[in-house]
Amino acid sequence: MLHLRLIVPADRTDEVVGLLERTVGTAHLAVLPGVARDPVGDVVLCDVAREAGDELIGALRRLGVDEYGSITVENMDLTLSARADRAEEDAPGEGSDAVLWEELTDATHEESTFSVTYVAFLSVATMLAACGVMLDNAILIVGAMAVGPEFGPLAGISTALVQRAPRLAARSLWALVGGFAAAMVLTAGFAWLMDVFGLFSPSMIEAPRPNTAFIWQPDWMSFVVAFLAGIAGTLSLTSAKSGALIGVAISVTTVPAAANAAVAFSYSDYSQMTGSTQQLLANLGGIVVAGTLTLLVQRALWNAMRRRATGNGGRQVTGHN
Image (cartoon, rainbow, N blue to C red; front, side):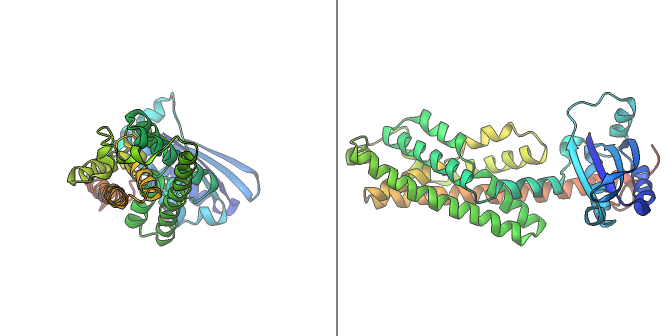
């Protein structure tokens, strides 16, 4: 279930309450007249089944509630109520299959911000990966993959393509390209410093390194793995099962490839640098393609299911609970 808190001007409350009462999947409607101070108005509270949430939020926005008032949505981990159970049964579809597009857009927007923290996480992850590739240590590679925050802007690009949101696309692309550029430059400097202290050496990058050689030797399997990881990551975002992102983080060699490219550049090993860059681009491209296709399929399947369930061409299901 989702919990909605709305601030509505008093002269629009009846219109909003009428919409909530007609929407199948709602429960626990409450109106607190005159309690809102900024903006001035009534507070309307309501719970709604997740599978009915996206359409209801869209209807509220078409009424202009987000412009003359506010819409706040919270995920509810536990609701003990017979009415809530009936609301979930009445709403078409399954909550785990529903995509809250507003929530997804907001989440990817936040995760796609080019900030000091984002660059710091990506740079530290790339430096950890640099240690991993130089020591041929798979454990360090896995740790670096888990630290990297790059899936946020990748998901942002996919969401922007499906939602046709050019600003989000530009923001996500800048975070991705700018973040990796900064991280690779810092990692190249880190490799130089490690060489000065005798912790890195040319012989280390020229060694066979069987445990990590795949990082600069891309093939079609690299794209396949990235594609599957992109599907899993997108599903984890849309179904609110964020735990699956851990598996995505440790399955794609974006950060290690960037690290090896930076280290190889610092030692003028342009063959490894080229291979690592190709690996990086293949993985980034695979994730974006998979994420975009996954969102398109989810939207198409959900719309088809809703049309079958309602029999009204996919319009909002209304009635009385």
